Length: 283
Picture 1 (cartoon, rainbow, N blue to C red):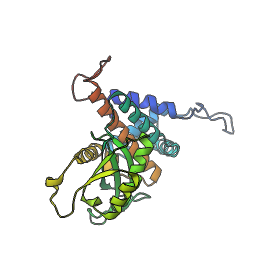
Picture 2 (picture 1 turned 60 degrees about the vertical axis):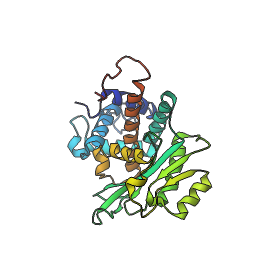
Picture 3 (picture 1 turned 90 degrees about the horizontal axis):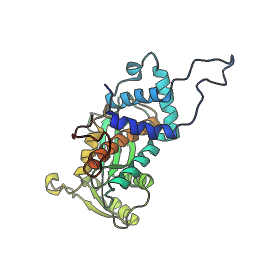
Picture 4 (picture 1 turned 135 degrees about the vertical axis):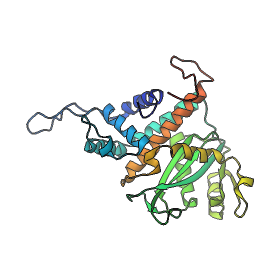
């Protein structure tokens, strides 16, 4: 039983493999001229997806053909190359071409999850008795497609992450419409946030402090739904990675899966192709 449906795994791997560097099956630098055959990238990739979905340690998902050290070493190499970020940009480009991104209305919000092992992107969580936690700030389009992701410690306030999150969205998407409205919760209700948005030429709908949330929920609920989709991945709910680049690798990999799932679901009512899913549940 695969960790994710084949209709998601296969297109993800096709784009992922195209960005990997070409390497020989045997190491040419071995002093004796011989070495064990290198574990294929596809095998390691499937183990990485298992780690992302289930949140298990590499020792638990390792198999006789792929050790935990191989997984850890390969993930670090892929994270340094920024492959997950590039695949995310390709997924957004495909979504925009086939369905269309709703960039006129964007939403930004933060989410705090557990990071029991600490690390470069961990901090004292204000909602978990000071334990180590991870905060991710996500910008989404009008339908909840994740555009830009920024990670930091759980003790970091949402407002200072607004600028980097919008910059990350611009990097992933490219050109933005002239008129963009940003929907924010009351955590961004400050003069600094409004000055930043005015400097970027963006309008904003920010919830006011002191007013109950249901009355001023606005259009930002889509990014909260996106956070719930991303929290379905165990590695994001309880991140045990200490390397900041590896943390961002898993965040963007989860964003790619969320984007592909939305793309397939919205394309079924617009296009026809062989193997098109006939139910909302992707198998």
